[in-house]
Length: 428
Ligand code: PMP
Image (cartoon, rainbow, N blue to C red):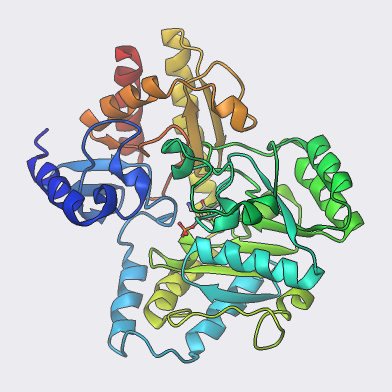
């Protein structure tokens, strides 16, 4: 495979951009080699600067649930562009998307649009603190909630991929208010709540984790958190930036049957445009300015182009529940196929899977928390990643990420992905 243009672009990029990239995992540091610079994407494919075409299982880290460049989203954006790109004033489209989201996600009674998942989680924590009058919150090791200061403590995703789950620049004072528990460990949460009685504003988590690889909540975990929050007056926040509109129209909370007080969203609600949102119970959201005292704002929030893309995407998902059956089937086909290969080759590796998300972990342990995920052989993952890339399959360049499926994957693509898996796993 010729990747000369990507190499040249990376060399130049490193002169002007830290590490040559605008988000760390993109640099391929964890897997070695040069990142590919992408020129376009369509359906299940992305094409790099040298014209190499790959079937890809990242889908812009989740948003492209219908595959890239979906005609309904593209046309909505082009149409919106004809009326100008930003007004900094309310629009009818914002009202429509807010109404649609509250229909699709019943726990969300009011919602505020922001520009990224990071903004959504930062704002949700601020509202939870304002509402409860308490300062501390609990997060789970290996969960990632964007790069807000108070979340960069035992953070997953790029933070762990780069080997710095705790970032310099976060003050001790900030870090002190973030309490940590292992994922799926209800007992540890109970102990933290007891030891910090009446001081905890919120518990925030990925209701299905995607940022230490894909890790599912064990039966009773989310229900247990709900109960603790109810008993102690703590705001339960589901960070559904990845899972929202991906696992079901109503996100992980619909699949798991547990209602949070607040939900943070991103990725899919922007249809590929930079959008995030936070919403939930009316009485909490009414603390947000200008209704209430908790300040939060954004010049480009509710941007008309972003809203047009998001609305087209959400309307499609709302009207086509078959999307989710298809994602589930696609996931089953891939993960069952991978298990057949692992069995055939006598390899002990583990998979986690739900709907259109899955991870293959290079460990023989069951992965139910961050410590389990860290038993993976990341060197071996790097070799696997490269062997897949050489066969035209583009995976997330880190063991600590989930893969994301789209409805653009047809049988021929799944066959190709499985064939590549067999060759790659055999070669390790
Ligand atoms: N929360 C979760 C669960 C995420 O997966 C991410 C990003 N992958 C974020 C928050 C941050 O979103 P963004 O990158 O849009 O700031």
